[in-house]
Image (cartoon, rainbow, N blue to C red; front, side, top):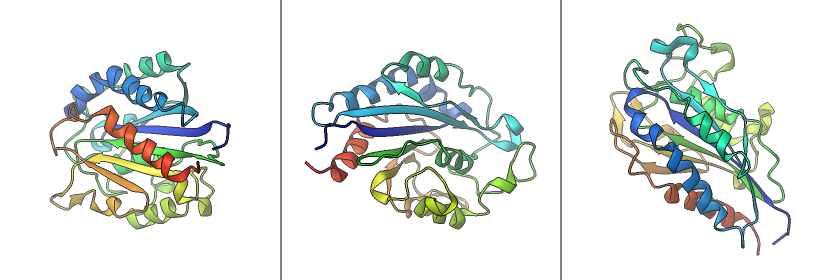
Length: 236
């Protein structure tokens, strides 16, 4: 393997609604544990890690306060800044109902200012939610919704995920360099489901309880999926 560090950019996309409160309060433990597991592999995988956060709620109740995003934080130097950011994620009394505007949060994550991962490395998006996603454009009439710059439907979003270079996104166009780790409920809630996203390329689904919380989600589980992605793509 090359002596150069693998450029690993991670975006945590967090459902910032009321039911997610226990998990958000636990981010001060979850995030360091996630990075710690990655750092423990540095003897065989010399990583340069950056992490940023996107959080979302529901445009019906939150309007133009629905989506928030941080810059990328360099690890481990900026861990304190990242944890300080997590402490400002508001969830109390947020979210009109289930489902939420998770796909809009995912779309914002896809437009992150990722570094070029070559020769190795990856762009990793981790969706963390206990709810189903609203359909794209379903809240288009709500205050703050940017319908002009949001995909019209899930098929358009899938096409962009599969071929991001066609629309100039910095998200790597090579499937070996990107992954969506979808920590979300399976099945359906009425017409709402994550099943369409599960069928995209480069998606790993980690099932969680619909309407519950993610406290049982291990940071090691997420880290191991990331490490598997890297080791599968990196030559010896």
